[in-house]
Length: 371
Image (cartoon, rainbow, N blue to C red; front, side, top):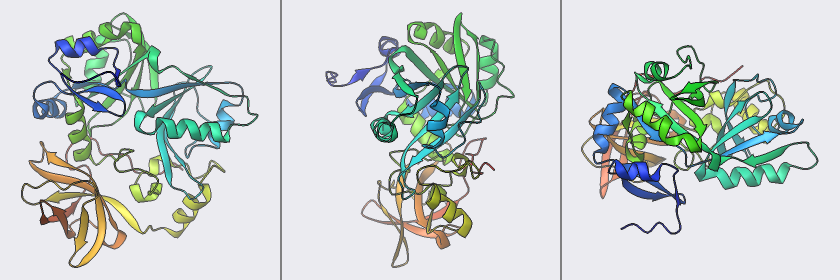
C-alpha cells in the first residue's frame, strides 16, 4: 500500500481508484501512473483521444489594474495586448536569460489566469514576489477550486464539440473559450502536449466527476503519466524539470513561440535579443533515434567520436516508433538532421541519429517566434 500521508490527492482520486489506477508519487502529488497498460493508453491517444487528469498544477488568478503591465515585464511573451479569450505560452528568465519556469497566461474579462506546472510552481511564485513592489496586482491561488483535464488525440476536437457547446475547430493555440460541458460551465484551451491535437478543460472542482464522465462516455480513454511522458518525448516537446531548467536559454530549446521579439523590456530580454541578433546558439535541443533496445538515463553523455558534444534530457522506448528515442542538447554544429552520434546507455554507447521533431504525432511542436 502506498503511503499517501505526505502527498496531495487529486479531486478525482476515488474515481481513479475505481478505474484500477496504479499510483506514483511525483512533485508532492499522488498521480495516476497508468491504468494497467501504459502502451495501450499511449496508442489510444495516437489513434483517437485520451483523457489525462492534469489538475496537479498551480493556477493563479491575477487581479488589479497593473496586472498586465506587471506580467509584461516578467514574462517573455506579450501579455498587455491580449484580449479576453487569448493566451500565450511564456517562460520567465534570470537576468542572464536562463529559464526559471514555464507558464501559460490566459486573459479573461476581469483577470489573468496563470497556469504553472508544479515542478516550477515555487520558483515562479518566488520570482513574482521578488519583483512585486508597489504595483496594483494581486495573485490568488485558485488551484484547489479548479479541475484541469487534458484531452489529446486526432479525435479530441470532435469529441469536445460533441459533448459541449464549445466550438474548438478554429481555436488558436493557447486561446480559450467558455461553454457548457455535461451541464457544467467550463473553459476549453487548445494546448498541444502530446504531438496530437490537444485541449485542456478547466472546470470547477465540485463538478469534476460530471466533466470527466461526459468526456469518458464520449469515448476518451483514461491516460496516466507514463503514457503522457512517452507521447511528449515522441512529439519532441520540451518540459520544465527535464529539458528546460536554469541551464537553458530559450533559443537553445527551440521554443521561439515563447518569445515576442517586439514587446519591450523584461527580465533576461537583453540576452535573448542578443542571441537572436547573432543568429546562432552554442547548442540545440534535438530528437534522437537510438539503435538497439537500451534507453539512456537523464544526463547521459552524447559523443561524436572521442568528443563530448551533449547530454540527454529525456528518453523512453517510443511505442509509436518502436525504438528508443531521446531529447538531448548537442553542440549546434552536430544538430543537423541525419547526424549520427553515440549515446551512453546500458554500460556502453549506442549509435543515435538526429531526427526531425515530431518523431511521432500529427501536430509538430510550435517553434516559430512571434513577431
